[in-house]
Structures are given as C-alpha cells and as structure tokens.
Image (cartoon, rainbow, N blue to C red; front, side, top):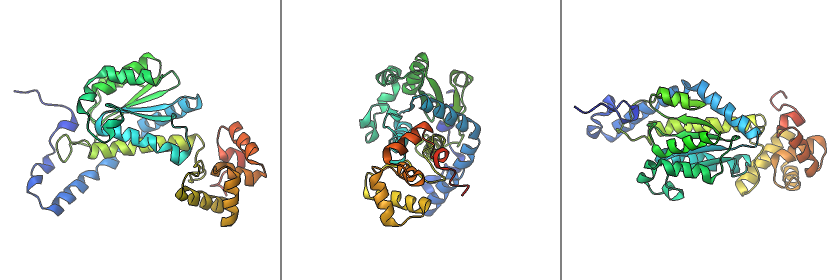
Length: 303
C-alpha cells in the first residue's frame, strides 16, 4: 500500500471528482466556488504576511533587496511581482528581484527538470551576491521544490534573512529554519496538483500584499496615490498629471509643466509646488526624509 501524500497540493478534491461530467457552466461555478476560499485562507496568514513585510522594509532601509525564488508557476509569479515594481514605484530594478528555476526561458516555456537541482538555486543566490542586508523569500506551493530549498540554504549561509511561502502544512523543520513562514491552506485543487489555480491565486495575493505594503511603508505612496511613479509612457504621463491636479488643486496645463520641470517625477513635483523649491532641492528634502513625502509636505489624508 503506497504511503499517502500529506501535501494538500497533491490531494484529490472531493468536490471535483466528476468535473469531467459537468456542463461548461457547472465547471465555471465549481471553479468559482473553490476560488472563493482563497481570500479567507490568505487572511488566516495575516500576522505572518505582516512579519514578512516588516522584514522587507527593514532590509530596504539598510540598502538591502528582496528576492523571490521559485520554480514553475511560483517562480513566474515572483518574477511578475518583482518586474512590476520599477514602473509602478520607480524602484531600482535590483531592489526587488525574481529568481526562477531554468532562468528567463522558464517564463514562457516549462523547464520542469530545472526545479530538481538545489545546487542551481544556490548558484543563483551566489550570482546575485546576496548578503546580510537581503531578504530571500522562497515560493513553493508544495513546500518541497529542491531549487528553492537550495537557494534558501545558501542565503542563510550568507547571513540573509529568509522566508517561505507554501500552500500546504509546513513542517517543524521548515518553521525553525526561516524567519517567517506563510502558509495559506487553500485546500486541494479542482484539478489534482494544478497549483497554478488556487495556490497560484493565493501566492499572487500574498506577493501583491508584501510588495505593496513595503512600498507604502518606504514612502512611495501618498494617501493612496502612487506618487513615486516616473513618467515613461503616455499612460503614466496622464496618471501623473491627474495626481498633481488632485493633490495640488492645479489645472492640467500647470500639472504638465510641473511634471516636466521635475524630470517626470510626481513626488518631486509635489514637493516643488508645496515648498516652492526647484527639482534638486525637492529631491534633497525627500532624501533627508527617507523618501516619505508626508514627512516633507504633510499628511494628504488628514487634509
């Protein structure tokens, strides 16, 4: 008798055992019903998610970086979240990085064997010169991916802080090995083992929360506006102008001119207007305040 697999991600879902006999609408309803469990599972991990955010913020303030490490869907989601930080919050591309087993080719074509080599995970950490100021978050829905474990082991040896995000019950060893473990238990997938579904959705929710909250805590948001964006395309030009119009009470043409004078930096433009400074002095004020615009010009929400 084979030993039963205790990983939630590999168990069969009793509610979908006859999915192949359902109508198209019934399949849609079943998947939707299962997806509704995801947010609740993520909410159960709120304390651990908050701890991961605090670790990331502490590392950022020391000049460190956040690394996501994963394979397959987990790796792709990490790369996706990391790649969205520079255009959204004007971060340096090195500040949040995604590492995926198999390299960039694995983003568009599965490199299944790549996840089985822990030494490749360790090499990826060495290549990025991970150090004591960095935070490395491993992502593996099943909790067992060798590439991820190899990367985290090497990161710990180098003195980095580490975390693990999985969608099954974490072992005691895992809990003791890392600074934080996040385990939203979304249950078995509609299609057995297809962790791109509920587990993937939970992973994206957790990563979105970590990166967004970390950006808020490091002063890249004013009120609920992404004021640290830099204009690099027409969409962001329009968004930047609208933010300036709303926060400063100015006309569109004034916002356009101010944004141009600031070099396309919304946050700098706000400080220039509020304090009557040029772009260089506005940037200096923000640097002194650690990037927190509220500390320079006051709380937008309070007004």
